[in-house]
Image (cartoon, rainbow, N blue to C red; front, side, top):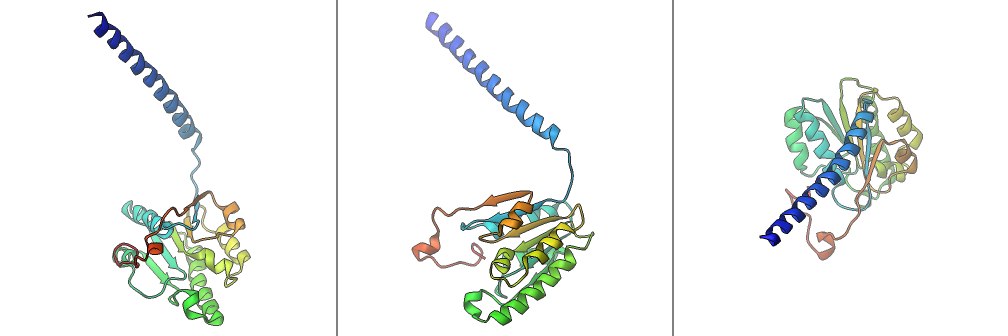
Length: 208
């Protein structure tokens, strides 16, 4: 009987310690929530060499649409091949602008790529002035800045002067430090393993 009583006391002590730890966590979270009362348009950057940046961006767009928000997408780099996200989101009213030339290492035509990039960016600039658009995904924009197809200052100016409640998501590798400094939230996706490196081809419905 004494052993059962001792075990019960130990269990009770563990439960109390756990409750105390969790209360501290709750207090810390509640304090952060109480402090974070500012509402504004958020600039989110998803960068890094890992897989999932565009997928994450489209997840945000889908969430926004689910809440009745008006969304738009500008796809840089991507070509005109099937895009599962576009197939779904266009049907629910999401506006898409696609650069359409495909990967720069395939076109190997700087002038053509630059003109296409500027055309896509002009569409983005119009969206970044439109107060009716709640959230915009600028998919793979980072490459356009890195390759100097679009002037950095032009990008920063449009982001800085967008409607105050408009959210923007920028995806792509090697995001310029000036955009990172401007951003409110930055996540870096790092690769651990990738099926492609093991010879697995990109597959429709999973990779695009």
